[in-house]
Amino acid sequence: MGKVYPEIDGRLRDFIVGQPVFFVATAPSGAEGHVNVSPKGMRGTFVLLGPHRVAYLDYHGSGAETIAHLRDNGRITLMFCAFDGPPKIVRLQGRGSSVAVTEETFADRIAEFPAPPDVHAVRAVITVEVDRISDSCGYGVPLMDFRADRDLLLTAHSRRTADDLAIYRATRNAASIDGLPVF
Image (cartoon, rainbow, N blue to C red):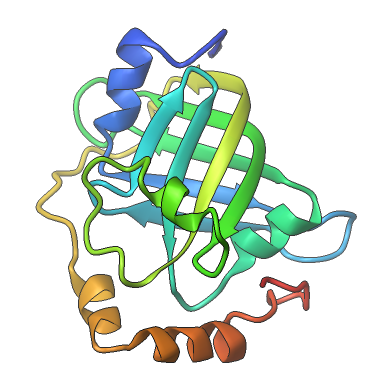
């Protein structure tokens, strides 16, 4: 049986920031639509902002489900798994919001990240107000070795201008796969 925590602190904080990858899950409202789960990584793209508040950088990509689902209902879960050391899974559940690169407060939000990688292709900062923090055993999670962050996302977007990224958002990230608006 897992444990529910009152806040993110101490060893729990160390565990979360020590994971090179985490997963984000969201879903649209109602019984229709697709549940989305996305892996996230790259050092410097996740930050703990308090005992009940976290944020991560959302880069331009093949889909924009998370932003669309957060606009629809705000529900979000972040999951961190130990792929080395003692087995453990930590879930942060709560309400999320996004601040897009086009919004006035974007610069303030991105400033909350002390050591982000190249931020040229960040399309939004996702913030989660965490209302449930829990762990479970993780006995079924395989042991794997971390070699390095991939640089392909940053490299691919480094060739795009700010105008190119705006077109990308308008043409490839305008709606979720279920037709929900993104930006």
